[in-house]
Amino acid sequence: MTGPVGIISAGDMGAAIGAMLTSGGVDVATDLTGRSELTRTRAAEAGMRDAGSTDALVEECDL
Image (cartoon, rainbow, N blue to C red):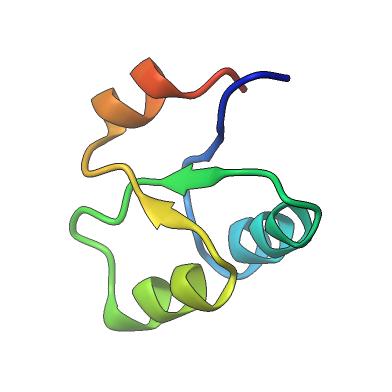
């Protein structure tokens, strides 16, 4: 894989998967537009980054 992995939702399950991937050195992006502070915190703690929009997430991610 050459590019980042995109996770649509950084809720309980998405953040857990994101954390596993980032712990292995994978660049993981998500879209936090309109998401709660709890979801934003989960994503940050998982090492995920905000792509800024769903369109940007889909455009930049290989998977």
